[in-house]
Length: 530
Ligand code: GAP
Image (cartoon, rainbow, N blue to C red; front, side):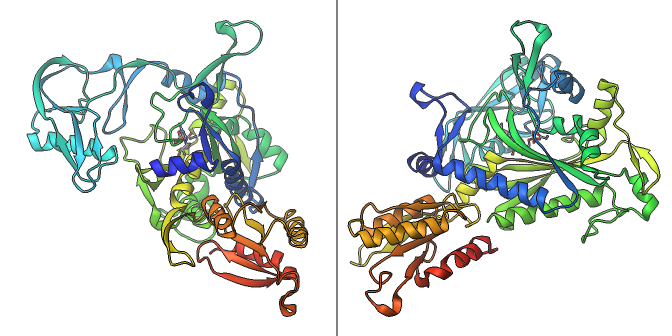
């Protein structure tokens, strides 16, 4: 991860925000390459989720909305109390509602990974719950250090102590809790010239609520009928207690969210038996929430594959009934195997009709929908595939990072750092290299090719330094193709006139391509499933 963070800074993918002032925790800036990569990810998502579908409409709502939205969604109340987090289950508790525990507490100063030797110096403690032996307690600690990125943790500095009426532990599993903090995850501001409680507003902690609030309007103007979806890409803000793992948990981030509105199961049943699990295939009128939930999981996994995150680098985590929100029917998280642990990229939740019902209750405006086909009125249910742009970008960067040993023409071995981005997401698609910068004919031809390709893809012109070094620079930037203009291009060998060499980043092989074939060839390579 350190190598990746350093490459991100060195090559201009991601930097700390406000770095000249020492940075600000949980905020990150995207440099020239990062900005292109981010834009590509968002565009690919928007294109495939919105423009390529008949049943989807887009939305671009404001970050600050009426504060009542957050009362309806539950955000103002849920996040307003002093809270503690369980360090093992990540469950969150009200600090003032904890059961005091008396008995033996176990402490560790850290752990060492017996495979890699990696050290974690985070202290940890477990309360020994009734009926649990030492092994069960240590198991909890091992789970904790696994969560800190150690594959095979060996516990260090073990001690025990008797505690009385302690509220530092989770009574469900004995794990240490975080220190209590009175916080609200939503970032607050004031709207208007007066700072008072009457004009408090929040920076949205998710983009989803705007979709629910505008459900009726979008439904009407887009002339969509249920089942259909509304999607949105936009900034979200959370005053995270513990921003960490580079951009993974930030305080300002972007989400790409879909709220896909479906018939309640009892309405779907008017079109035939409602499938109880994944029926596969194309959507049908009798699909209930289970079929739609499975469908969206399939679609999203296919999408990840289309940007180069193949199935075997992802894992699924189905939330247990205890972890689910009270209104949710099921939630499956799509996880990526990051170097710091396997962590969530996207959640796909079946949320029932909780959100629309809440907005109906709080706004007094009907959220009911009349289904012409089913000839009935209802509040639609929803499936919510909710992804984070920044996490996705981090996963794409981690996945692309490769170090290879290569041998140059003189037989010398060197390490090649190459970012193997899928060409579709790569920030720069083609590097354009005149063999020599002091030969006006080569430069003129190279500029001509730059002008030919530029309207269609992001190109980078580089004439500085030896050609091998220029290739390496583009390998680090993840540029999948390189076009070199040499003397044969100018007709030194008449049979090769108006041809260039096309270099493939991954194989480093070069082929000669006629300039007239360059654009279609590159376009088909960029779009290919690889
Ligand atoms: N509307 C549902 C919702 O917001 P969530 O699981 O809290 O659900 C959805 O967030 C996605 O947003 C996550 O899977 C993650 O990719 C991204 N996300 C959430 N909090 C984040 C944070 N602090 N930093 C970066 N990305 C975050």
